[in-house]
Length: 282
Image (cartoon, rainbow, N blue to C red; front, side, top):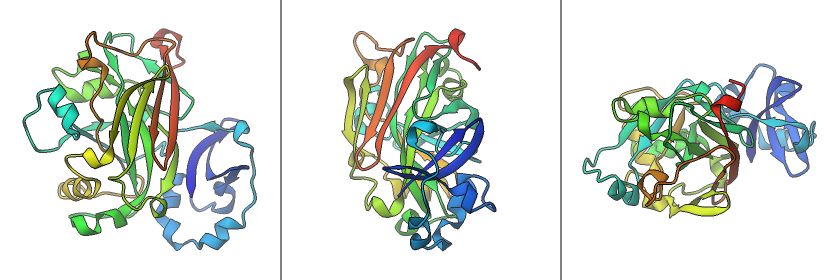
């Protein structure tokens, strides 16, 4: 199934997405105020109960929010595709890890904000996973049991702010996009067998398969859980394929008025327009 966070009349909600519209799950599970809290108890809810709930809103009547607007942690993996490593001449085989802050995100169809202080705002399409079950020192062979589901992410990067402190290039407000929805784990047997593409103004700029990850989804979960406890709602970004704008000739960076799309097989297509910070309400 597909789960979303959304707003209606400035009220933040979460729900179940169907072809005919959105079921407002917050109405039916008042003890779970957000999608983050819902997925923690999702395994205990019979699928039959959800299937009988009626639609509350048409899709046109809601505004998408980041899939998890309030994650405790957003853990990001860099240099996890060989083509990307070659582009950046990366030699260290260990995962490159950094963090994002929750307020650096926006949702599907919202505007991504190009920082005024950056002249090198780059795109990175990625597979995101959301943790559904708490765990520490998780073995590789049990890692997927801790996943609630998968989504798309546009991990916008201010390249000219990554030299002294990598995290600085990733945490400007509204520079990352998360969505359009969460596809639950039962619908994706192998997260490392998905086609992934990024398009800029309709032109394909990244194309690969998650099978090309150097560190697979289970291995990333196992590795990260050795040094921190993963909790429901935590987000892990699994890295971007090659083809980023920084390493093109000439370089290709995001500009005001651009449209960026990240499409992942079996999940969907995340779409956002780019606006300059001067025009943004942040």
